[in-house]
Amino acid sequence: MLRNTVEFELNGKVIGFRTGMMALSVAAAECGAKTTQEFFRRLADQDLLACQALFYGAAYQYAQWKGQKVDFNATQVSEWIEDVGEEKAEGLTAKLLESYIPKNSRPPHQAGEIQPSMIGNSPQ
Image (tube, rainbow, N blue to C red):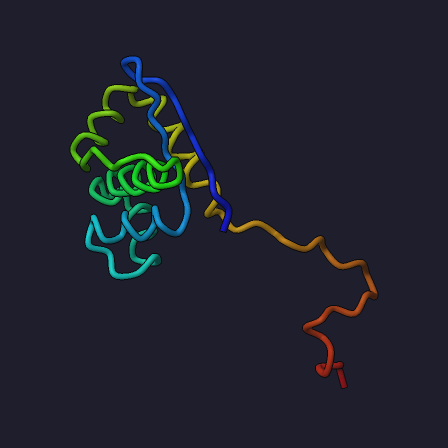
């Protein structure tokens, strides 16, 4: 799992978000999702509570990562997002979620090259 960190200044204070396992755990718990699959399904369905929970989880992980006291709540994080505006919030969402988009970890095989999944499964 890749981690992304996003920071910006809001009213003279640096606000940060960081994605990772902690952020997902906090976000899923915050919106009542029982699995990461359910959480991502709810995000795909544009469930506002899941989206808000993602930001809260990412802010929580950022604070922990920086060794800062978690002195904010989910409502305050929602207000930070409202204060930065819709366009910047959409970019922030894309940046935070890009670490969860599956990537092709291996290049395509060359023609005639034996692929690991073919071993022991040779054609008759």
